Image 1: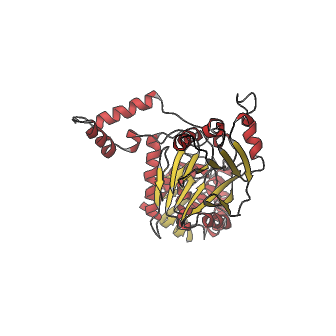
Image 2: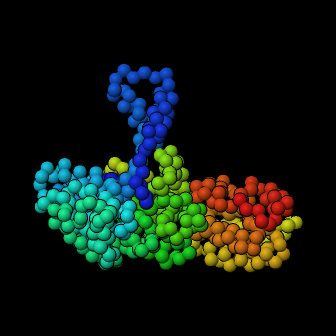
Image 3: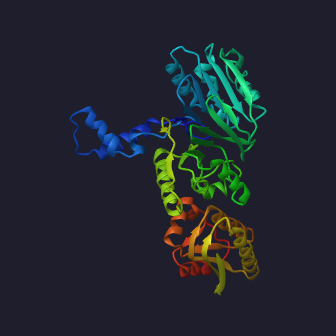
Length: 318
Length: 122
């Protein structure tokens, strides 16, 4: 299985500006000062090996969309943020005209998590099946609403694929295609749901837009059990802890620190920081990753917890 | 986790030792509330001496935040001092160093709160 990140930004998509690009080029030139490159390959090697991530790359700007790639003609994807557009292009390119089934799992229907659906290419292709799974009873209503006049020019029913909404119940385990899927209720305005996916002895937990109150031990245990021994936990780490529990309390998001603590408690193997704050630039997100890795090191009492930060294009092979 | 108190000038110094986490944060909050009532009644600023604190989890940090909020409600002041290197790093990573006044030593904290015991907010 490959976990592939198409959209990792929280709340609203962001884009690099021309000034951002210029600054990255300047930093790269300064780093290369005095160096010459005889070949393009040498220049690529310099960029790959000697530039920091925030200089040579970007965490990216699409809102939430994460694919679990099992191969074959059946697709699995969490959320339909703006990353759903490139995800859809990837499906069409790989299928080469062959029909496919796209299983979508929606955490909740806030706009940043469904805004990409009207741009999902396969949804316009006859013969494609789009199964949209979720625990909210207003799931279909929300999808239709965002494509209703005057908000969008193409109505939901115009999309030619065979579309179906599938209501799930939190806490119940489902077999969907090749995956076992268990949704769990999370604390967020209007509720959100995380998903625990299991296949061939590997477990991936997708848990975004989830606030974790720290005053309820039983709730901490419930979430830790949901994460239990997962190979990968995709975790909403939008805010610093101090903000998440003070000025941004009840905003429905969590922090890198709580992500580490929950994963340590759950004996999870790999924490992936996700749903990045739109105001954070690449340098800030890179620093947050380093700090989170340090926090894990400082507080480790059991096995090593690997910590990564999601970026558009990241692939994790399990 | 253990909490002991002394008074120095305008400061109520609370020395916290051991580990502060999910398992004992309720007990800490209860004990701290008693001291904060004293602080409010006697117009004393609170200096949390963390030189004996070995570890603090997010649940423990939340106790500090709630105490700070409580102090502000009576125009009081609570500061932290003498953090061990590991706890200082946890404060920095969690951004609690932006939320609370942090002093390198108890003496520095006492000096500051003595000159400005109430109403000083970062």
